[in-house]
Length: 495
Image (tube, rainbow, N blue to C red; front, side):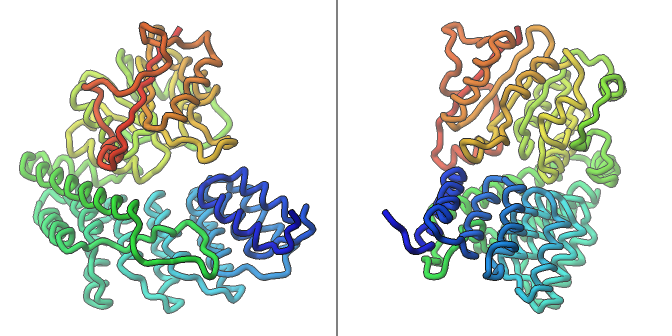
């Protein structure tokens, strides 16, 4: 079939990209030139979006450079927004903000999605400075921050326990801008202030206001298609999809659980103990003694690594590691149940590390939990010595974004490092709700038969369901509430 219009390919690239079918999107993009056509700005935008959605940052940057050289059309606000999204979600927030300033200099005005994608990632990477600069830029451009933008800024500040600044900001936007504070903003304030202030008044008021906001549906407006490119003429109905409705229900449930947890902490913890915790919290997560930020560097000194470990943990006999600790529900519960065990949580997202640290303080388990923030491969290699860990748990890892992705957690390199750090007879346990990823992990384990063997008497690589006493994570609870109940349990012992 001879195709005369590039729009045919643009639609394919867009649809494949939105479905995270990066390989197919790339093939459709390459077919444009083979059909004797030239990619236009929509072709490049759609392909950049496909790359951004699966974390292929360098590919996205190369496309941007190629578009500048080979495309006669100028980048529009959607193209720039995709570029900002790719940079921001990879943690390059300063660069992402620079892209926003660049688009303004080129005469392209940022839209609401441009700002929101930057601010949302400021929350994930706890970048208060960049979030503040983004809000200042919005005001400078005459785009007054709305409730969603303010929520992102509040959550970013609360993640760093900047409670006084948060309170002042909330007063300002209410009195000067007439903005209604969202339920999620009050929840974030309740969590942070309960730890920072021994006086419980601020936290209790925030809990009260959060419940009131939840009752009236006081949530920021989330855009179901925020990371998906929509061409002119596409259906852009404002009616929320079923997935968004479910997400909002889960969000409300999660918020109420957090409010209950804060109120329980205030009710059950003496003022004297809260004062002690406030002193610990005053240093912030950046300087917390039980939080380690692991830089992504190539050099690694074994002797220095072992010395750091000895200084932190001494000769602890039972050390266990959770990779992908998420919001910290599983590891804090297990730490409270097994106080004689030294627990280490490995998580790449800084805001989740901060959440876990706060929960550990609140639950009085911070003495036997250490959080390591960084990419799992790097953390294991740089921070954990040989034969020092009794068990490694991998709970609900994100499946690869696309079939050919190199961004895979459980691969040969990871399994070799897990084998190295495990003591003789130690265990690797993996849990997922994704049957395809369960099979992929089992295939990776089958490639290294000299390292591990299944603990199942039948020799099966995995079983359906998890043990009753295993514990639940945030994502396990979320998928259960969403009626996604399949679980796959993989347990192997070190050979």
